Amino acid sequence: MVCTVAVTKEDNMYIAKDVLTSVVDQGYSMDEALLNLKEALELYYDGNDTPSKQNTSVYMTTIEVGA
Image (cartoon, rainbow, N blue to C red):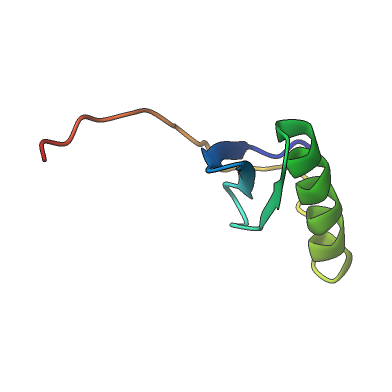
């Protein structure tokens, strides 16, 4: 299964979030955050039905907001 993941950096930590499930994990490097998220998602899907195919299209973009 392929998951769509958004990664942000906050201070000295990388935060990885699965877009479909909203499962989140973190790490001191991007690789560590992604590995931790992979483990968290495996635990998440162990107790839930694993979707055989993601039918959800995800569109990510940026917008400018005046402040």
